[in-house]
Amino acid sequence: MLKVEQVEEHEWRFVYPPKYDELMDKFGEGIELWQTGHTRSAEKIYKEIIAEFPGFIDVHHHLGLLYEELGRDRLAFENWLKGYQIGKKAFPHNFTSGKDLLRWGLLENRPFLRCTHALGLCFFDGGNLAKAMELFEFIISANPNDNQGIRGLLVEGY
Image 1 (cartoon, helix red, strand yellow):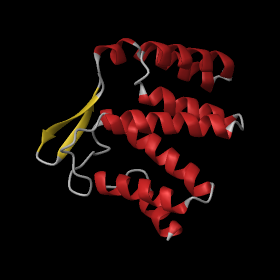
Image 2 (cartoon, rainbow, N blue to C red; image 1 turned 90 degrees about the horizontal axis):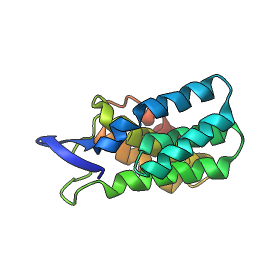
Image 3 (spheres, rainbow, N blue to C red; image 1 turned 60 degrees about the vertical axis):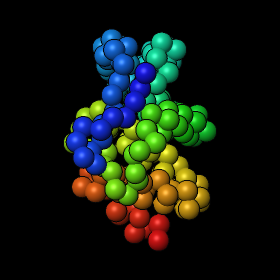
């Protein structure tokens, strides 16, 4: 089961079940197919991975990117929303936003941070600035080093 656990005081990271590691090669294959123009094959592999492990946030993110590239914005949004929701459900009740950190430097956190960023951009581009700012503010509070360029989006949104 996917979860977020504390690694030290105010420092947290995502912990993935063994199925995640088992599917990494297949995920890499999907990325390679997509990068070489085999979009349908990549999509098929991504969907197979989700069928095996629905909590694979990075697959939802990559499906979002793939669909966005194809101009299928609704499907892109749905995948980023799903990845975000999966990640949020993994947080324990004692994670305190604004106080606790989910740093980009911990590789396990990146899929969730990427999905949250992409979802925020969907809201931003769609004119829902309040929801976009909420997501961006969460990212910047959880990862104040701002490895994703969120501060610039916050400035633009305000």
